Length: 254
Image (tube, rainbow, N blue to C red; front, side, top):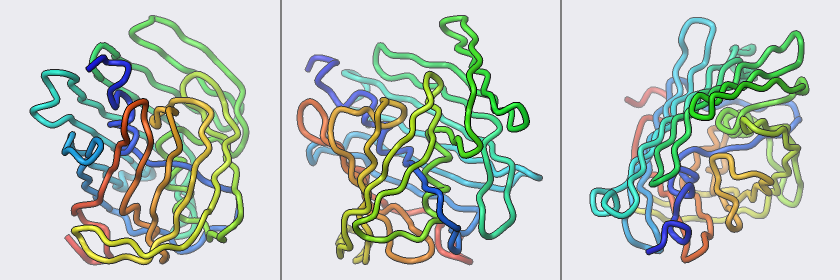
């Protein structure tokens, strides 16, 4: 297959999960948390992804990794690691705001190594692209999140079917005001079990973690934890699906 038509960044797309809004927070998911996903390309196993959230002193640390399956590495190797460090808010109502975002991606011929440092007092972000040896500085808003932490903030928000919510997301290139639509409630059955879910549709304007090659849909559990149990995106040929297979995401579970 040609590299252009393959899942490309969409493999990591479904590993890393995003987007928030500006309402008052609800009860948040427990920390620490670990989510494990199986990635499939048009029904064929294509890789795995893990997302972990921990507390480290005054920081909340989010790490998202994705790796292609053995059979796929010959055609299109993927080995990605994205991290976000947030200044913790007042628990349990607010996950906080990002101070540092790091992105190292190896996706076929595409490689990325860059970081963004957020200055909340000056309301600006400094980006260091190590491969291109280029630094830049841009203004941000008080509600600016990176492409990884934005989703976790969104998980703490009360969702209303039929409503749209907005968040400013910085993708190491531009600042985007992003809309997220809450589409419907749906009962979803996956190998892990049966879940009552809320389906959301992020309308992303940049590639970021989600390669914007088609519609993106995320199934969140319809409870306070808002666990992403399934994610799906259309790509140039076929679709990519991420399905929750395990981890530690219920209070008291290890």
